[in-house]
Image (cartoon, rainbow, N blue to C red):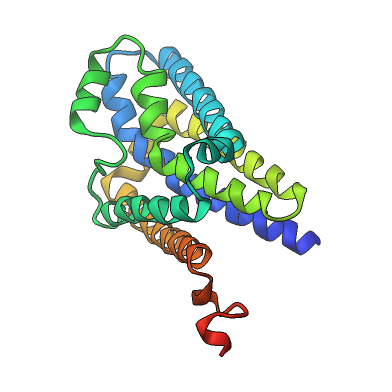
Length: 223
């Protein structure tokens, strides 16, 4: 039991942290807060982290109800989410900004705004489509098993929001320490992990949609 709790907790934390990827948000954060002082940047980072936590938690808890209302199965969402994450992973491996995460017009619009904490910093930069898809799928796994599985998912969201605050609040120092090379290395490592997560999501979704692929009784592998 303890091993299962630790394993699922690590899986949830790694998945959420990798897809939110606060380190990738550092250049955008610095560009959008170029005129702000250190204290204002910390306040912006705090509000962005809190908003990220609320948005991801809200979708994690209400995602199943939304799908049921729209007639969407979790398997279909896993496949769609996996494709989206794979696109983001490829961009991360190539160390280029992902349009699935945020676009240049959104960055430019954010730089012109007085308050960028909620939009576009928290949404869509941190709590974007990929992050939302990840927490919804993880919570779907939690609901299909024991009730305790929901706790690691919510804890992973909280931990990721806390890390996001720390990274963004110290964005200038992070940028100086890591530099372009360090950021690219982190991006490639995170991209590789995200690609694996994306593929697993798609495999899980296809298996749910086509049980024969898993070799369940009556499936093609059971004959």
